[in-house]
Amino acid sequence: MTSIKKISFSCHAPLLTGLLAGSLAMGFAMPAGAHVTLEQPQAAAGSSYKAVLRVGHACAGATSTTAITVSLPAGFAGAKPVPKAGWTTTVQRSPLAQPYESHGRRVTEEVTTISWQAASPASALPGDFYDEFVVRGRLPVTPGILWFKVLQTCDVGAADWAQVPASGASVKGLPLPAAPLEIMPAGHAGHNH
Image 1 (cartoon, rainbow, N blue to C red):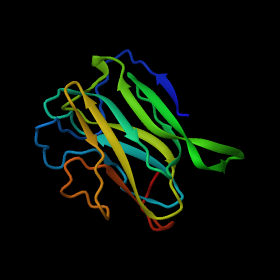
Image 2 (image 1 turned 180 degrees about the horizontal axis):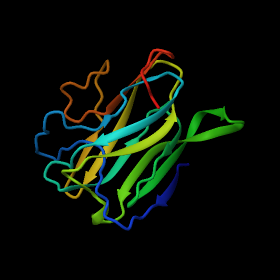
Image 3 (image 1 turned 180 degrees about the vertical axis):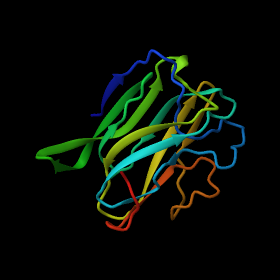
């Protein structure tokens, strides 16, 4: 059984920051380079990783981003989202096929989906602003590629950044690419604070 937990945060001043990048509504062309990306696209296997998902504008034809939902890749363990003032954070958990031990306790379910929803129109991310949505977790010990799939919902339409290539990690030519994270052998990745 999947469980969902909501956390609300409010803010007294208008929120001027925003979310991931990306945009495409049905029937519109996507601007070149417009997609949700990770601030650090490489990290060491088995390390703690802060996934900073960057959003640079609203969906095509929209004036603001109203929600960001990220489907976490299998192997991204112990996920904890960073809350945002003016947004409601929802965490969905699913049972694990292979439970594991962490800090002396048995883990039987993991966070699989995190959603940030603007609490009001005033909290939504304006289309001409940039913001980041953050989740921290532990990476698998095996090198490879993890794909962070993001649904960007706007005041008009949505963009489902979930496409992955048939092979490899290049998103070239994909109109709605997921954000790739290259897991490097331990000791070979750059900084990932």
